[in-house]
Length: 531
Image 1 (cartoon, rainbow, N blue to C red):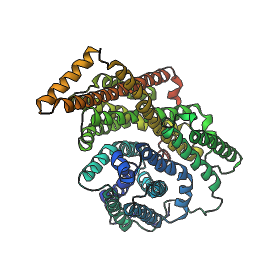
Image 2: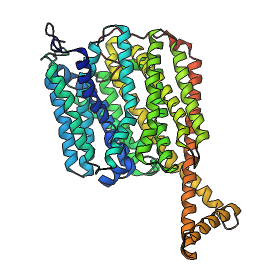
Image 3: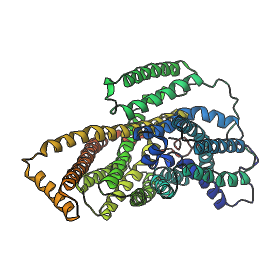
Image 4: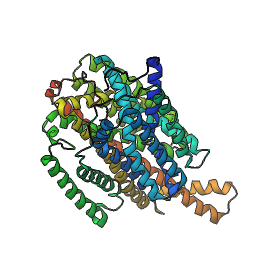
């Protein structure tokens, strides 16, 4: 950071600094899910399948994860104000291009570029935040607030997107994002001095080859996990080809990191057992977090809620997150045993999944789900900050930059695996239940005959003739069967996640050495934050 000249002008109050940083970070965080908050709307606008919209999210995530090490080099070379202005300008340009076209190829390309450009804006904000927090207490609170925003903004963003799409065409989201991106940077640039937040390092020996291998590997992982079940895995040539390319690129990437003096990802971090455990727990946490997508789908299909009401109901989850990040930060500051914090967090997640397993029904009052959603938020918020701080603190300080790179990959992998599992249960397990129901619907099945007669009688009372009533009765029976299949596959998924959480709780309970890692918050650089 530049010596002598302060980062902000002397007349600027602290509340204005905080407000300006928040106004920059909020739209930057929103980029991840704002355009895909309503997958059917996005798919319909571009003429794509829902899995294509899922993959576009992984393209954004993969670009952010792969470019992060190189982005730090650009951040060190370019002056901070110019770097922020350039990053915001590129994000606005990508949103404007997306606003002007309905091309699916342009959509995917812009999602990739948004992932790359987004990293630069985030880096400046994170450095500004944590460079101003000197004490251990304030830095722990800073991390908790940051992670709380990271995982808690999704329902709010989804609600905003749903309200816009209820009144306008899909591309209004891009225009909204452009106007969201403008106020914060203008305000922040106006109160900042022309200083550097990092020591200037020339742009020499940038490892573009490693970035190429790393980026392609992440995109291939995402493609395999999202499209695998749809294409029947290794039965399809595309999946086999992607798997072969993944092995090749991963091999070249690992060899290059071992031979490089300045590796993009220092593989020494994987020698530390607690780092591996922490990374595994991050993956599991994101898989558990992904089960909310099943819940949202259940609200929309089985209970017939529109996207606005689904998003409003999920705001209960934000309440749980807000409460738990405060409690978790206090527990970390009081040096409470990490095992106990994790056991409490995963215990809350297990309670949520077990409770929801018994709440799934074709008819229910939406208020019945408020408390379980709050509990899910409590579990997630309790775990997020302690796990990440534990994981980064498990490696020496000189390689914590690589820990952040690996941490972003862990989040990417957990998010991708969550999509993979949901697609598996939605496409495969649901089809099993559909076939089972169809085998039971015969002329000799009294329950099926009775339900069909009820539908037909109801339709006849509405004035339909016998032929049309019989045809529509069969259609209603099929619709009811599909709704029941949706419930069964959701229950199967939550049962599986419950078993996974129990296994993790057992792993934590039998690992007493986890408490030996000391959480270090003295560094003024935000190594854990990009994680």
